Image 1 (spheres, helix red, strand yellow):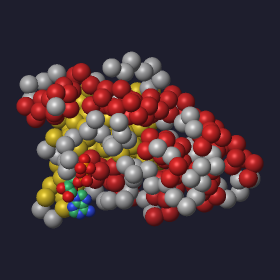
Image 2: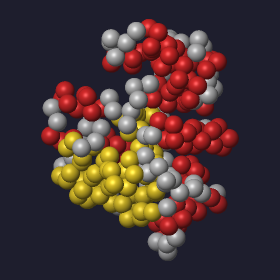
Image 3: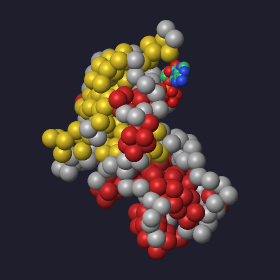
Image 4: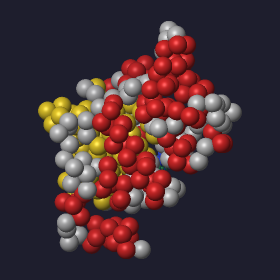
Length: 257
Ligand SMILES: Nc1ncnc2c1ncn2[C@@H]1O[C@H](COP(=O)(O)OP(=O)(O)OP(=O)(O)O)[C@@H](O)[C@H]1O
């Protein structure tokens, strides 16, 4: 289990969600979700396939609109922002998607340079190189700078994807299934990296996963989405200390199959 983290600032919320609902046609996916993410915290969101975890992340990042409820990110109500304000807010959020989506025709360096050239137009090439060195060193892959994505392993590509997300120094990181498709040892490396990113860059993160080993390793707090609401919240142990059959089934599937 992860040790208690004294760097979390419980006086500062970076995300506040209250009474969030979202339906597609007559299918209610989120039925009144409440959620706080504190400064410096790693929050794990667990839930079976199709329970609305990705919908939640899309609403937080303004890609989908809620039907009702409050979604406040870094002090701003996402629903009230103009497209320009939303773009500015999104730059403070780093997305690490399942298929880390590197550009195959670009080297690692070019992949990392791309967001800097796009969003920090005034930055000199020397400063860009310096920042690329910092994030590559942070993910432990300085030696890959001139390699092509096709020359990297799945775990390395995932790391470079995280480095590319970090390059704009986001305040919030959203990890969608960070260990999906990776072997247990590589998964452990990614879990360590998520904790390292938290320590080193003081990010606040939401980690969506089915992988309970990941949840245990990275989560300062864990929430479980069941029937459209967060029905379990706490440390990993607290969430699974229940007689609720739905929660027990989730645990048994992960640890006894
Ligand atoms: N744009 C959309 N239009 C219609 N239905 C959608 C849309 N986006 C999501 N849904 C539906 O909402 C439900 C929740 O989807 P979501 O992708 O959030 O699940 P999830 O919990 O992330 O699952 P998984 O773990 O498999 O990725 C699904 O039934 C999905 O079909």
